[in-house]
Amino acid sequence: MSATPVPAIAPTPSESDREPLRARDLAIVGFGRVGRALARRLEQQNGWSGSRRWRVVAALDTSGAWTDPNGIDLVAALGEKDREGRLGNRGPVRGTVGEVLERVRPDVVLELTRGAVVSGEPGTEHILRALAVGADVVTANKSPIARFYAPILDEAQRRQRSVRFGTTVGGAVPLLSLAPTLLAAAAPVRVDAILNGTTNFVLQELARGVGFEDAIGKAQRLGIAEADPSWDLDGRDASLKAAIVHQALFGSELAPEAIPCDRVTADTARRVPPEQRGRVRYASVTTILPGAAEVRLRRIREGGEWDVPGSTCLARVETRYSGTFWLRGPGAGPDEVATALLAELESLERGARASWRRRPADLPPSDVAAKTPIPRSGPVAPPSRIATLRIGGHTARGLRR
Image (cartoon, rainbow, N blue to C red; front, side):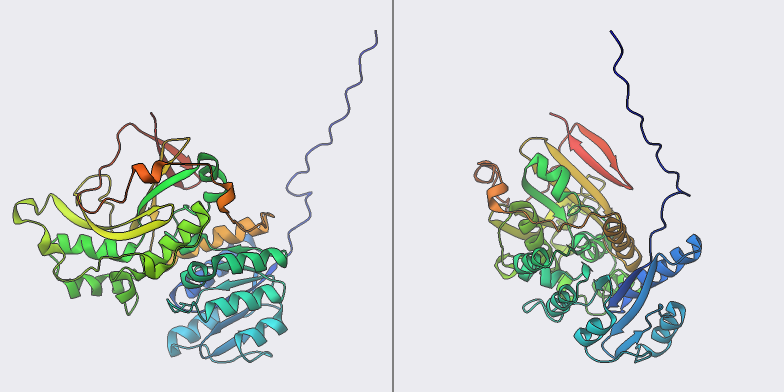
């Protein structure tokens, strides 16, 4: 009996044989600390590679826009912003954000403004305008996603575009980027997390005996805190993040203003009994369950699992099928967020276009929420028997049962 011929396998093309990727045209809307950090990284990457993979054709702030269809001079734009505190107008296209996007027609819009907590503007309008001109969107702006998660993703799906928002929660911690894959398969039922790096930094400084205003000033000098840190300290930032995580993991809307929050004040550190100081401190911990969330000041053991340094963020995700995952990494700072934004751009570049959208029908039945109510006080107890899994540059830690 004659042997069946084996079909030839085409050789895999070498890197040099592959067609080079064309430069992607970017528009940066919002040229504040994060926008400038991203611009510096893009300029560095273009220099290292010897080619312009990312071409910034527009950069906008509240004062105007720099535009150039061949790519703006990022070094000059950064210098102008650093010297004058504003960009002004330079280039052939001027007007509102919508008018500039309509004429420039970028491939990707990076929406990096700071939205109003209640209205989500101006970021929501910027995102919708970007989708309307055929651009994908990468955003670090929490307010539009927290407020209009479903309408924005529905519009992206209708226009066959993608909206990436992984950097809105936890900075470089890949909580949302794991949502459509690993965490979706494991079926999350509860999240406890330190989601605001600014608040964590201030609380750690207070525990060391640093004064309240001095702790805030230090965070601002390090680029961790905004000039007005009030929406970090009063829990509004964490409530927006909780609303986004709830949508992504549990598939239903949770209004940020319905989430109770504890405020960090000058008196917070003094609430620790004198005999426990040096061993116990406060952390702002966000707990998210199906249909509920809260941001509470919880006492944690110094040196314990939840005592993460500086602006680090930490998330513990309990799942139905795979135990508990721990994610930890840099959660605040322009360079850290710029790193995560670049990762989102890389994902788009490699063809992963679909926006993540979880619906209630995707969720398995669960009675875990009823069995594990949100705790009202006391320390956060870390589980034992932790196994560590490396995912890219990040660490996922899973409980082995």
